[in-house]
Image (cartoon, rainbow, N blue to C red; front, top):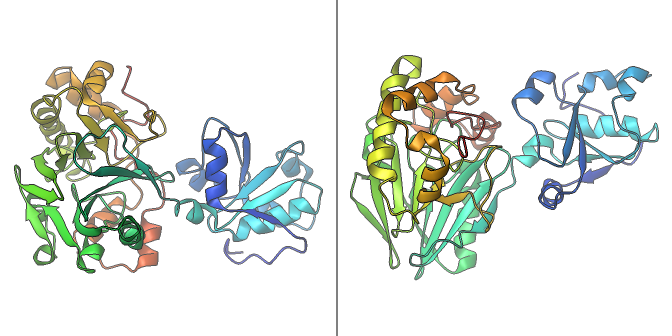
Length: 397
């Protein structure tokens, strides 16, 4: 049986929308999840957190007329349980089988696809440049983006294609015009929204060094190089070349207050160096990243905020709820930012996590070499980002 083709349960099953589940996790409420996806999918990507008790029992164990007692014994009977699957069909079916047996069970609407649709905007209160800066957060994958707005204009940094309409709607709600959409690099974990936004009249901005990798739509966007400036209202966004994660990796210094580092530096780790040239090119890329961090990033004033394009499970949010931190704090907490080059390269190459799911197809799509529709694009990027050199935190090491 296909996991999407389950019959409607014979009993009423309560559903939980993804936003409500996220609110419970944010509040620290105890949550028990029964994930009925296959073990391989569960191990790669799941809903987790300090207050989450997550159990994996694949859906096919619930298909028999009489569910085995050994299976039922794995489901807590003393507290509410929310069943999770990929798209919502299997979870509703399994929840129905459990409700019939007296369990206090609900199911997550739209499953992990619904979870991947959560996208929140949080103000970066530590930003002290012109205008207002928001950080977009996608908890399912740890993707981060930024919206700067001032004096009737706005720019979004590292937009996701799946949320193209969201950026336009947010700008309209704020009473500003979305003027620019900037990419820091050719992403390997999600489909960029720059090209889609450019199609609506927003000026797309892509690093020239990224275009050199084979971007097919260069004539549709503006290319920028180190030292260029994009102006949004009274705020300047300075282009800072920071190769390493990729050859075209570029950071954006937002009005001398926050450096949007893309995948170069995160609040809990540094970039992995193997997604462009593979294992063979990783040592050279790691050395380039070392130079970028030492020469272009840690030399900034200590109070300059760092805001990456991702956060991992080990990342701790700042007091304002954003995944940002002053560079002075990161230098003090993260040995990788002060060690010598040889030790840095060894650290990055020692224990990198698995590469992002479908990363080669995602890169090809972001280069414009692979055409996919919106549903295919959304499916390609489901899962963790895995763009950092470590799954654990390097801060405080």
